Amino acid sequence: MKNSRNYFINLDNKTYLAACSQGPLSWPVATALERYKYDLLERGNPWDLWTEGLEEAKVLFADLVGARRDEVAAGCSVSSLFSSLLSALEYGRRRRIVTSDLEYPNVTYPVLMQRRRGAVVRMIRARGESPELDPEDYAEAVDEDTALVTAIHVATVNGFRQDLRRISEIAHARGALVFSDAYQSAGTVAIDVRREDVDFLSAGSLKWLLGVPGIAFLYVRGELVESLEPVDAGWLSQERPFEFGAEELSYVRTADRFQSGTWSVPSAYAAVEGMRIILEVGPRAIEERIRSLTERAIERIDERGLRTITPRDPSRRGAIVSIIVRDPPAVERRLRDMGIITSARGPVLRLCPHFYNTEDEVVEAVDTISSIAGS
Ligand SMILES: Cc1ncc(COP(=O)(O)O)c(C=O)c1O
Image (cartoon, rainbow, N blue to C red; front, side, top):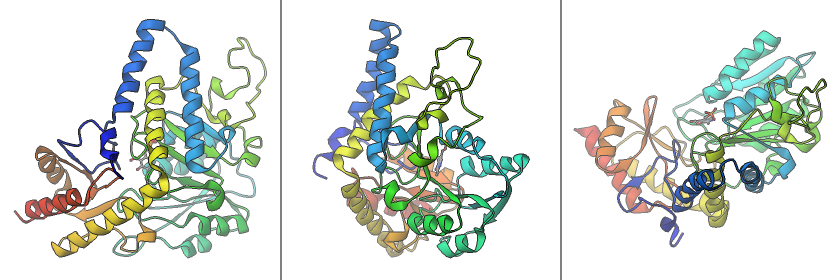
């Protein structure tokens, strides 16, 4: 990862361990945001550039997850894309949605809302100190009446990583579709939607993909696209969005049919540059690097007598290492004052190393937490 820190503006002054929340600002992203302002000043309303930028973002996301461009939609958040997807499902004989208590609320609430449309929700619960789920939990819950299974790829609170391929195998054997929220994995592990065999996968740009808030992507398996007509979609989901006075619906034949209205244009400028960095460094190399940094973090946590709820088996964790501390937001604030950026969530403080971090940074952060927690 030689020179990888040069992409970023502030890594000489800060120890940045919070990409699970917001990635650090890079030079290319900062320049892209400036370019957005410049384009406004110079060209006024450059819709051609804006549309090209969004298109480029979808191409890059498709590359990142091993999909085709026509299988990727963009929206403002995973919540809105997922809601659009759910609105295309019809609950006839297959009424069950299987979900888990490890999902981020952006999935949980829209799933619970489907009860008003006739769905029956089956919630499976993670167990153990970590806590974790087992594919067998899905095997027990998914039946011939299941329409959809949601399987978060990497859990937000403890970094537990699921075996999507195995879950897809279980769901598909019973005819159910699989949605995965990959917000906490995209950019940290090599994802291949064909290998994992998921039907839908979504992630946004501001965290590990090094962009800014306001843009997210949804992969929809090509063969399914035309059978799904979202009710919760906007004018950009249609074949002729600029046709005023339209009297018939005509969904675009690509995943764009899950799109809403005008997107966050500056976020798309930033997303392109963030994903370019990830693709240049390489998801596989990033995955290996993160594996060794999280290993080192856990070792140091043990040496310091702290407690982590992150799985120790590297194949079962992503890039989040969660430490139990008293009053996580207060510890986060104290660390920030010392130049160490981390992320508090619920009962834990999360250390989130990305490819640009060093072992020394990770060790120093754990040591500082240990001295704060002990004081
Ligand atoms: C796993 C996961 N999914 C989704 C989100 C955010 O979703 P949305 O794009 O709907 O705001 C987060 C944010 O922390 C997350 O951790």
